[in-house]
Amino acid sequence: KRRPRADDPPPLPAGAPPLFAQRLRIMPFARVPEVTVSRLTEFDIDFTLTQTDTSVANALRRMIIAEVPTLAIDLVTITANTSVLTDEYLAHRLGLIPLVSKDVMKFTYSRDCECEEFCNECSVKFDLDVVCTDARREVTSKDLRIVAQRDDCDPVIPVHYSSLAPNREEDRAEPIVIALLRKGQRLKMEGVAIKGIGKEHAKWSPVCRAAYQMDPQVSFRLDKLNQVLDLKARETLVKYSEGALKLVDPAAAGMGDAMVLPVDGKVLAYEENFVRGRFAISSDTVRKAGELASAEGVDPSEVVVIKAQSEKFAFFVESTGCMPPEMVLTLALEELLRKLENITANLRKSRGEDVEMLENEQNPW
Image (cartoon, rainbow, N blue to C red):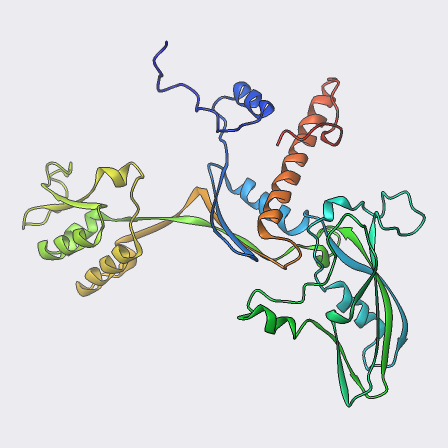
């Protein structure tokens, strides 16, 4: 058995599909992006994307916002409206109410459906009929009633609650307000919800927040710290560094005679684990270094260096409630993969190879 060498390609990830393994054999040193989920709630997901660059991170963000399909009311027929709001305003408000879209992939886009207008395969129909008999009456998302939808799907109901609600049951009592009626006023309308993506209109976007930031990489200007801090301050900083810094002799740190060295002996240097990337400088260490430098009349920005890591991205995604956040991420990754596969197929087709688009193939993931 051959011993592994330093120039060997990286091992395949666990559970990699055959097509993915084939690609790594063609490009053995290609980077393999990884997603690590750090926090997951009913509405939010925080994850870290590593081993890739900004182009892929921003592409994933755009997929999450604009390419994940959901259901939203698109056609509104208003029969009676004696409220102070115009018909267009009410139709716009109905469209912005998020609808539960966990089974959205079972629906067909209305433009691709074979029906003449709308059917249960491509749409969900609602109606609303409210008459105010008291002094005032709020028309809310709870007044929307499902008239027709697919039988093999969960009810496509409006999302009546918020992620900020301290008590879900109490919050359900105050759903999304559509209009306010006075005594004698009436609002009667019908709505048709269809499948769409955020690229067509923001009402189909499954998230209300999708952002990322590059993971900061913090380091110190040790030459400056060694000049401005006395031995006691350097020892204090080492204690706060949590294993990232150490005190060594100037010769062991590789400092030549040309550098201005402290006269009181040992100097600051990085521990080997920090150099190898196993340790990071904590915020407490940065704060302490700034305090010690400020005490000597030096601005903290002169001793602390903060730069972004170009291969590590922290994502923060908040769902509107139409589907779980992990489902949003999964559908976004699948859509990104499909688009990349279509680009590959078109490039191969332009060279005269006999290939098919990914829509006619089995998704390798």
